Length: 238
Image (cartoon, rainbow, N blue to C red; front, side, top):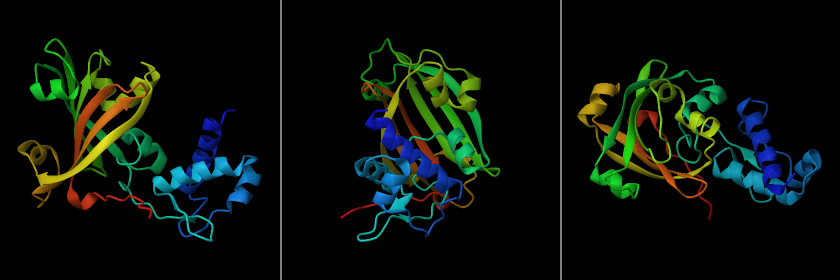
């Protein structure tokens, strides 16, 4: 086994134990040496796994002590530090998230998209508009654009289920990372129409640029959230 998969093993194992409630918020993990013994891996591997868990807000390293397991609320870090789809979240958190496809069509000759994707007039893009409901309330409005040079075909069924799953399993694309910006602005008429905004005039918008492991940008999009259902949390180390 190479080092890459070793630290991922440890990371996934501890993450799953936290998610399944075997390890609880407020408890401490074993020390790095104890964990190294338990997993029969080097302390270096353990340290690497813990640093990712910390980055994603599962644990916090405390000087002179072991790592503390943190509370995690829904939507905390979800769309920020990890590239998770709502389908994966459903499985992981047992949440009742429903995706509803509003529209799927191809657009061409859009100046902004051509700039973002470094494309020419000949290229075109899928535009996918979806809402996500948590327990029957439409809290997310998601507009995604996919480069058809990379993703030639999308169907309604795929868009309704999980586009990322299709890209990884069917097209064998390696999705690596995304760059995200958070903005706060007035809701558009589309958002007011498709979201249960109640009395809120504003939405929190996460603008996302998602890349393949070869560095190609394959998706640009925005997800709008109702402000009271959004928490931005990030671990800042000094």
